[in-house]
Length: 414
Image (cartoon, rainbow, N blue to C red):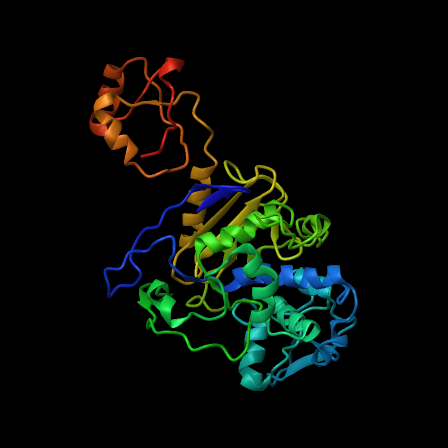
């Protein structure tokens, strides 16, 4: 799905809900958006900063005492015992929102993966894997931000999201649980196996969560999340001009907050859970508050200064403030480069330049043309005559012309 700040410019749904039924995927299908939750949690935290109940640079341990005595994991001794030392500075909201606090995910950090095997499930607070503020590494930072929002607001994350973000934006199918009456729209999910095959996870109605994870707990539809991204494009406003964030807050979220620290590269230590991730190979991206920022434009794609992130089930989004467009792409299998390629292909289609001439549709093809899906415009060759076009494309049955008076309809790619 692609949109500007005010309207949808493309939407399309393909495939089946699951392997056992013949139910089609639709624009109303509900997906687990995993870490795309993080941008919503970031908005919640920045709302509290605007209200003065949180600050970006105070120690978060003032509200979450369990983060008051954090340790840094240096490595392991010869017996395999973790080597830890006290963190040299406190963790702040600024560090959490930029993934520079030192928290990591054990699926993308070899040291923390080894530590998890040593500590087991008893460790409610994992050690940091570097001194706060010295590196960028993707981790549980926004999970902790969600807890911070709950502690300061006095509400559950679900209640806070609904009242302050989701309901004002009209995101009626977004939340931390799936009501029974919406279960038919919930997509199945798949897991890559060690032999390369995909295994479908059992499709059952999820039990209501006992806690709410700001780092990855939401389900949503493409249309709902586009409404959220359009709010960012409008610098904090809903379509009805209700303010979710101040414009200067959105500007801060969309600005480089990590200096020279490179962001957006994840090295997997569990290839069945996720493949390696590099959102912008060959380039050095940065991070704002809640968003990856590409400082260099993608070739044939989004502008420099665009905002993006993704979810482990191969859900992707980007926001291009310069061009005033957003894109949302989703599949149902664990994060791997095939999903990245699908998203990049969609981006390449969306960013094709407008054709200089539109397509001529003969009268006998008018009904066929009108039944075509509303796809983004694409460049196809122009020909001096219908005869030349027919010789080139045979049964393609769509021809461009060279006279402006006949150029009256957009060119859909085929």
